[in-house]
Amino acid sequence: MRNPLCISALLLVAGCGGVVTLASDQTVGNVAVDASSVYWTDYTDGATTIRRVPIAGGTPTTVYSGPVTYIAADRANLYWIAPDAVMKLPSGGGAPVQLATARYGIRLALDGSDVFWSDVDGVHKVDANGASTTLFAGTVYLTALSASGGSVFFLKQAACPPCGFDIVKVSAQGGAPVTLFTETQAGFPDALGVDASSVYWGNENRGTLSKVSVAGGPAATLFASDSKGGVQYTIGGIAADATGVYSGVSGFRGRGRLIRITPPFGAATLADDQLGPGSVVLDDENVYWSTAGSQNVDDEHPRIVRGTICKLHK
Image 1 (cartoon, helix red, strand yellow):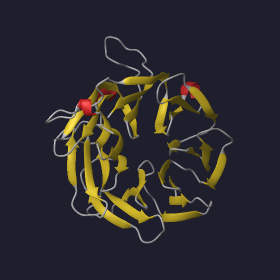
Image 2: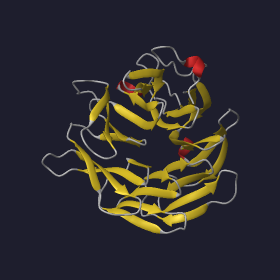
Image 3: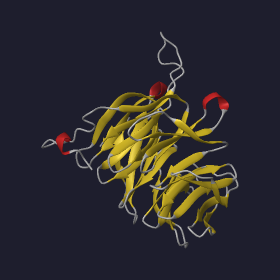
């Protein structure tokens, strides 16, 4: 919920207490949150681990060591995808459980008791009974996957012409894929997010964040870093709920910011001067994100700055 002390007549001022750094000196992959902890993949010194820290702050601990490409969480469980398996670990502790076999899984998405993943051969689902199903067979953009409202959303290469990429929806119960919109702007898709009403995606060329209804229809551009293009921007991650659309946007040398888009007010910067803002996740109270850090902060003072896990009240 929004903090009522942060609301003025015309503007929502997020945070009020400022950005909280939950962990630093990390080599971060992506971030997930459950009812009590924030999790992230860490690649420090070439070893892959999943680490966590309490939402309220504390000392980070390692909960798993081994190959991991992506993590996700609900209020009770942590999930991850390794190169050949989809795994689950109860938040309260216990042994990891393999839910399904993957070929080379890349992304996870959760919706209720269903777990979805993208792979080199398409998009798949495992349900609460352990039954695995292929929902889409074919080549997809492996790094863009989201799920909500009984459907899974992903991106695939569009036919030429017009080329570009398709934003696609498939029911979790199976059936024919539905193309919601074909994006024909030049550039590569960076991220995908969804809420109850819309699907959101990023495009690296202009640093744009766009949306289309989950039922399909015309698209709208919500944010553009560069109206002309020509400089490579990155949309590090997208998360959305009733309070707005949150994303990490970065440009030259990875310098960027965390933004919130609240129609009709537009985009507001929540945290500036972020080095490589990446994965973004939400719970009822806060927004959490990672920064990748940088190996060359500026020309005069080249140095390595490691990544962080940050929190801000909505």
